[in-house]
Structure formats: C-alpha cells, structure tokens
Length: 299
Ligand SMILES: [Zn+2]
Image (cartoon, rainbow, N blue to C red):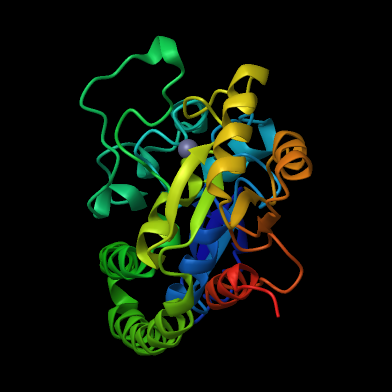
C-alpha cells in the first residue's frame, strides 16, 4: 500500500493476514470455555471469567475482565440468571456492541435447553437465586450436547468462512460424546436409587440423570447458607434415612457438610463440578468420568 505523506512516499507495511481469523470468546464458566475450545478448534481463543474455585453466582466485574469483554467476539455464559449479579454490568461496561443481549455474540447455554425447577411462585426476599429455573445444566450430558449443537451453529453464524470446519468438529464431538454417554450410563446403573444430601441445587441435573434421590439440601433456599436450625433438621433426616453421600462442589465452603458428616457418619464427596475442579479434570470428558468414579460405592 503506497501513501503520499508530506511529500514523501511512505510505505505502509500491512501485517500478514493469518490463515484463521481469530474468534475471541469470553466464557463465564470453565465448562463453556472447554466446550468452546473443543468445538471451535484453531480459530477460537476462549477464556473463562471464573475458575472452578469460584462461585459463578457471585464474582466481581474487575477491570481485567472488562478489558476481555471489550475485545470479545462472543460471550458464552450459562444465563437463566446465574450471572445476573455481574454479567449485565460487565456487558454494559465493555461498550462492546457485538456481545450485547440479542446480538449473535451473546450466547446463553441454559436458554438453549428445557430447565427444571422453574418456580411457580417467586419470592426473592427468600434469596431465591434460580428465578428462571435451575441454570446448572452442564452436568446433564444430553442437555450439554444440545447446547453444543446450538453453540456450533452460532459459531458458524459468527465466522461463516470456517463453516465446514466447525461442522466437522461438532460431528466429531457428537460421536465421541454419545459413545461416552453409553459408558457413563453403564457405570451409573449401581447408583440408581441412592440418596444424597446436596449443597445448593448445583447437582439437580446430574442427579436426575443418574437416578439419585435428593433428600436434603444444606441450603435452606438456593443461595442461603445453612443455619444451625436447618443443620439440626438435616442431622435428624441423615440419622433416620442414612443417605449415601453429602455432595459438595470443589468451590463450596464444606464446613456445614463436614459437621453433618461427623455427626451422622454419612461421607462427604467433593466433586469437581466443572473443568479444573480437580487436577485430572482438564476437559468435559474427564469431568464426567471423574464425577462418576467418585460416586461409585467403595470396595
Ligand atoms: Zn445456583
């Protein structure tokens, strides 16, 4: 490119255009970063706003995060109000039109699938953080596959030049994921009818897929930490019904769960919950595989 500038001819060097136009994705949680990477392959640069050690309901829209949102071509979040405490602010502060609500660059996983536990009556004064139904959809592999398909279609819409590449990656993922589901569902047979006490309704999709019954929740209401009266009630239930485990996510405070375990003899099982929640869990396949192995009855 030649420009005549102040009488001198200036040569403007144009940077070599890479073979792939990069698609920058800001995921809200590690599971969606992992899904974006496996479906997006080489052209996609995905980042996550939270780690497995943070509670995705509550984080701060830090300046570093705002900078990432400013550059993103797409946000890939859970939606269904999971991030309502910080995502709207992040989007507003980013000043990035591509990722605003209704744009192709705004993609919410929980809005692509049918949600459970949709409240018929809502009272936010009781701390109900799941006003649009349970948003924690990523631990049902069938719903995850639906999300994957919709996400892949969105990727094609955003980067149509690579359509064939994205479609091939989705087909490959789908095949591997369906094969893995068969293995997991075999491993889940002995878990049917087991009973769990949970910490938060993080586990609802996973447990309903596995056929495990929830007989108590350490949170009296989603988002409300356990009170001593509530713990005492759970202790009575635990002694009476002897559930098989108390389930806690890697990021959660396990104090209440440990207390209950000590008093009732019911074991605490800490599950990774998302990618990065334990050392071995570096992708979505490993997340499910390890979750199922941690739930298996001991020898
Ligand atoms: Zn929640």
